Length: 365
Ligand SMILES: *Cc1c(COP(=O)(O)O)cnc(C)c1O
View (tube, rainbow, N blue to C red):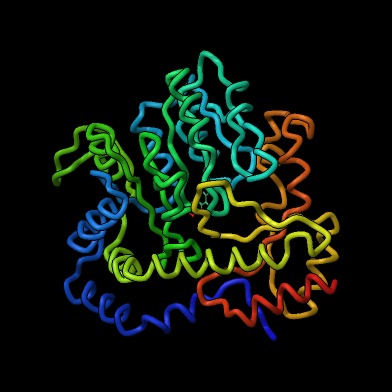
């Protein structure tokens, strides 16, 4: 049996009629950049989180950058983020001219450790960017306490965690802003690049909206310089169709995640991911830890099961950050985990038979 790592085509085929029609509508109305479909999507997306504003933009990396710029963060400032994430999170900080300061992760949950965040705070620290990694909410109670104590802004990187929740509250609604990516492979994926920022703060959102669109809300009226980071109509139309199904798809991911856990925990030579108590982990990725990772990965490949590694080298140890001179002992958990993590196939279109085959293959190994 072949188990691919993802199957976007199968999802497309399940909603083909609606998608094709919505794409045709955008083309026939020439609503290519921003416009009606984007405005509708922003309204629906904000409403789905119960917040006042959604500012769409070109991608999830820009969403973080625009949010930081809209908080006035730049040269001379420091922003603390997790050592274990996709590079977008730290890249966006550096783009503003601010300094990236990494913190280690919690051993149980792969998300930023609030205690290490507190240790990294200096007089220059302005903000914290937790990442709800793999779909698991970060420890928002502790992080918000630290942020309040030191008067820091919190931007939540929700690129992997659409509609995850922490103690009944959706992630992205704790800090001043939540940023999202709609890259095709994300839980809510467009058919190209797209991103958004959600917020309840009026001034912040207005600045973000201006900044993302050349500093203007109306044509030729540039209040300031900004950037060109806009969602296009085709992506908004696709996302509007997909929003009808996202709750079902999220439930399917969770169901697979929970089943994997039931069958794998204590049943193989490694560890299954824990779900933080009282939280909704939306399983963008299902990540186990194994000591002999490359052997297991090769074995699974010979059985036609595709896996991936998120991420083989943590941010502080990438060449891009060698100027920071970090050592393994600076982030001991992250350093250990980067050589152990292995992502198994998880997506709504995965069948129970496929999932059982993956579990059996791992247990027999
Ligand atoms: C995908 C991702 C992003 C950025 O998204 P793009 O839309 O690809 O720019 C940011 N942060 C994390 C954690 C991601 O996984």
